Length: 138
Image (cartoon, rainbow, N blue to C red):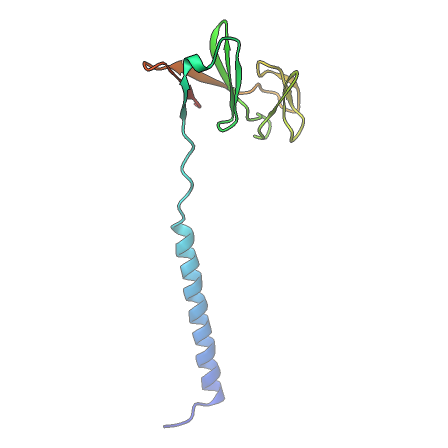
């Protein structure tokens, strides 16, 4: 048996490293393609009994984020996602304000000061047969 030359050793080492890097790259590609994305957020939320929200109430639903209003006209809701760049607006005395770029909205969700130029998105609210409020996001 003949001793391998330095050239043969370097060729074997470089081919082995090249093969190993190819396998690692292929493993990363397979892992990337098999990534499970987060499930889409629900399109409707059961808020509980309608009697839990008395007339004249304004309830912040930060887990959605939305605000639910029960007034003389019935139920109203709007999203608390700023229509400028999608930040969550914060409740202030005179309405709502975006902490990212300073857009201001009145208590009904209409733009009081830009850079946003569209009001907060209105959401549909219904009372189901069991007397629960259902908030629809679309």
